Image 1 (tube, rainbow, N blue to C red):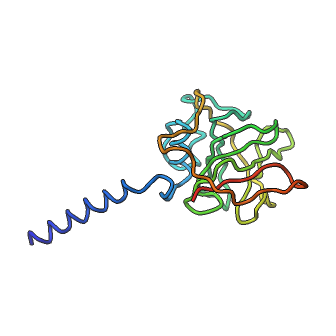
Image 2: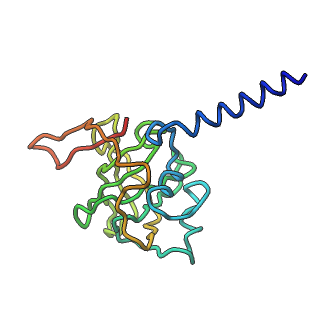
Image 3: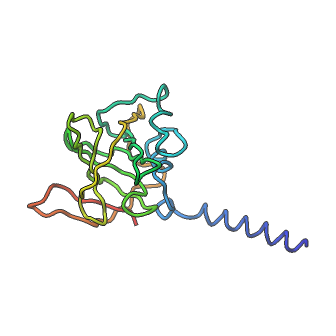
Length: 183
């Protein structure tokens, strides 16, 4: 019995060490923990709770700012919502997002295109670049707005720079930009 207990403890310690040794880029990321990690916004729980949890703790609004987190509303296909950090502002109706678990399960995507398609220009409905389509596609997503971190972001989240590889580069007759997805 003693050997079995020792073996179980050894297996537990070894598995914990392996998990801690896995580089952040190789981890399976959910959107909420990743958004918290890179934005500094200390909200916990599913993405669909971030907007209400931010009330009274963080400034919220409908104007994108670098470092802010865009909170997506719950939909039939996104029952737990989604959160993504604004990594750049391209224009009043186009931003770049950095987020996890969107195009590829558990993976990080950096600087992907998102456009405001709301009638009011208030970022209440967006289209977001989707890897398998190589573009914005036809899906639109309702959002609740932006949660502001209150500090500027330098995007070095302690995990080093984002290891991005180009997976889609638009040609000269296409809309601007390239998209990176971490390995």
